[in-house]
Length: 260
Image (cartoon, rainbow, N blue to C red; front, side):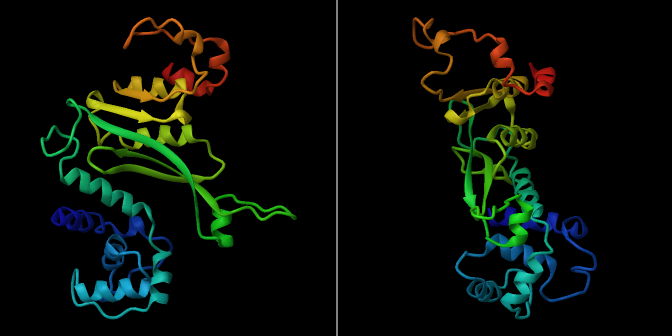
């Protein structure tokens, strides 16, 4: 698998200008190149920058690398667009033929199982970061530095297909809709089942998944569709859920026009 990871990095870092933030960055030739920085962040062990740098140089992943200070590393990393790591991940999945029927990948009765979920997490508490994520303080209260992460993961094979970091005020559903759009070229919808917890009990999400000819399982809240559930008389029976006015009001109009 290391061969595919290395090739994924090699293929994506060719487009340096696409992933560099700011002008005149990474244009001078250096023994610690743009590719080395990207490779370092892909393989660092998460101990400390200094220890990881020493291990990286000792392992000599690419070439004869000159020593670099952790201060220089921290500065240069700010010029790297983080989307490059998502592109490397996608390229890796492409190289291993992830979206094909391959016995190498684990499946459940011929289906890939995908889990979708989101959560809040702590981010670096710097003013620039707080501003980027719209975290504003009040005169009497300093809000915690947090953001929202939304992702879709292959539950049987351990791959994260897509991840989005958003403003902590953002609702989970819009982010999940974007996750679904981002992975449409990585999956075979007809052979995919999406699994969600109670936070994703939403008809527009069901409609989105149905529109791509895929399937879903959602854990319902106790009082969700209670009238319809009373009509169930046997296991695995079908029920009809009507799009009543009170339900349609909860769905953005632009979305209902496109999918429902």
